[in-house]
Length: 102
Image (cartoon, rainbow, N blue to C red; front, side, top):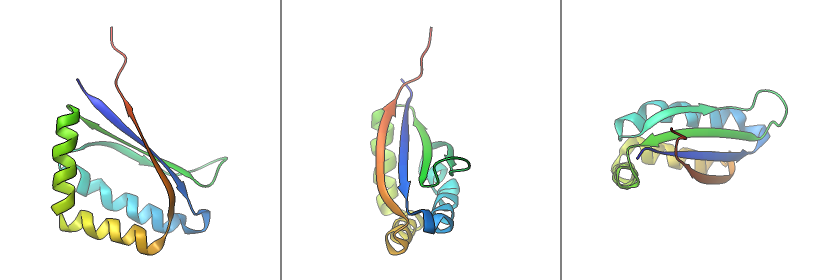
């Protein structure tokens, strides 16, 4: 069963450029580590401090393998450090979704 990790970010609205750099970096890192990246989404209209990401996996076991690869990937680790140094993410929440099918 496919599962999708929906990540909701609360951003520092004055550091949106830093978050966008962080998000762009994941566009290559996530697929290289085994995630099916649906996309990162920046605020456009309305609320200026909420962003989202959607990443799908074949199963929760596939997600666990992906997380293990992230922990040893130099680009992933550098991107995590970048976000910490920039302090652009105030809150990060994960919700697990499954598709509605017939």
